[in-house]
Image 1 (spheres, rainbow, N blue to C red):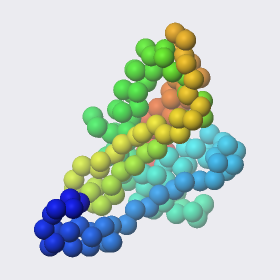
Image 2 (tube, one colour):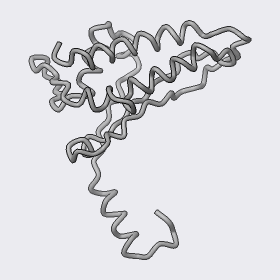
Image 3 (cartoon, rainbow, N blue to C red):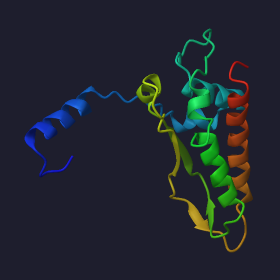
Length: 157
């Protein structure tokens, strides 16, 4: 919102801000550190489901998987681009950084672009790479790519 904007525009923006609902899941760090591969797979499936229930009897439907994870602008494509960069860069090594994934569910429901993005965050422990590829980061990234790729290719599995 621009401070010099007309008052009706400011009112419209404030109304939109109040009505917009953002849902997010930021688990406790201790919880995530104890995740098994199946826990991680389930969390990634719930992320793109229209039924992300905590009820363990309800199987996530992954109804948004192709839109959020797939396609030329989806999270999988973004991860593959990051992988390509990681295979070449030797300046940084990342320890304990996190990946944040977001998308706009309402946009999908209205038939628009999902706005899916993945961002690396938490760079408190980045050190110099000293001319060496960060194989630890690259390995974790490849594991995430595999998990998401499996969901895109077999959303009902």
